[in-house]
View 1 (tube, helix red, strand yellow):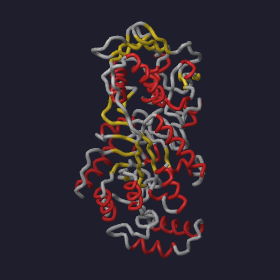
View 2 (cartoon, one colour; view 1 turned 180 degrees about the vertical axis):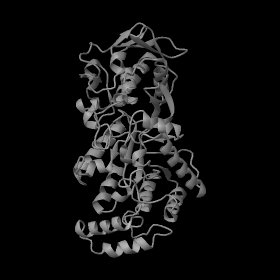
View 3 (cartoon, helix red, strand yellow; view 1 turned 120 degrees about the horizontal axis):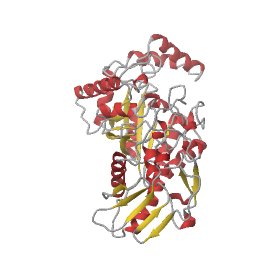
View 4 (tube, one colour; view 1 turned 30 degrees about the vertical axis):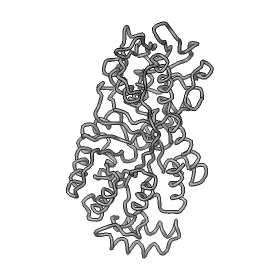
Length: 454
């Protein structure tokens, strides 16, 4: 598939919108002969000129070159003070940023790079997918050149911010403040209540064999037959009140994403949204001021109609329970995503945001940013109404032996802290996913609390 959006009109309008959200001013981006771009501000003299490189930043592969820029040596201080990765370049001109009579010249297509990473053009039409048909972190440009754990887009926009401040010193650019968002994919609201007989017996077997919890058999029986109207307090997966209490202590509203369909009998949830115990849970979450969202079923990621149906089901049940929200968002099950098909399905379902875009096997900045931003379809060249809320850390990625296998001690904590500090450095937003059924043991809860408070 050939992409040819940058630096077209729609792509430039999208970048202008992102700059407005970041800087607070309506900058204009114009392309003259396709070889250079100009960033100007109506009513102000001067401009910033960028090299334009559409041949590089319209590619849907990960084979771009990349070098490192010693920004500090040239008098620019990036967040964190490290050298900046420069995707798309074999060599760099010195100086990379040059003062001129009209303003500045940047000998790099900085905004083309922002376009390429944020639009996820790299992922369009890829066939090198994993067992769940997901684009893999290990095939990404960010992994290849070791910048996956850095918000590279935010670091470069910080440099641009400094250029703007020098070029137009009278401007008072928008200031941002670090924040944190916590969400919980509700794959298993109960360990025992909704399972079929065979899966219920397997769960009990796991308790006995893996956890040596013989008493779990009695607990499983009690939970199974006392969860008709509300989830049992004895249920190991029923950690919802504890989660909400911890969020409230930190001044955070948790988001709980519920599965509303069954397109794969082995991978989707056992519960039905209409069950009285789930309805009671929805009401309780809403009453305490937390958020309810959608966790589309396993095979929904390529189907607009399936996602539309699951959105309608969620909204119908919530409306029946008197639950009204200003915004509706969520995250794809198993982080399954096909760019831009899944993105368009979210948009056509009139969802407010999606928070899928992190990698399952590695933590970090899949979108190169820790800021929420408007979505863009790089194939149809359209700005969409749905917003992207990048996922930075998922609990399973940290702890599972299938992924990083860091356990629940210092190694996992230090990884979370490092990524959270990277978000702080750019005044961004740290987005954490932790499943409710992974907060059963003391060590699981300890790591979660460390992640909230660090």
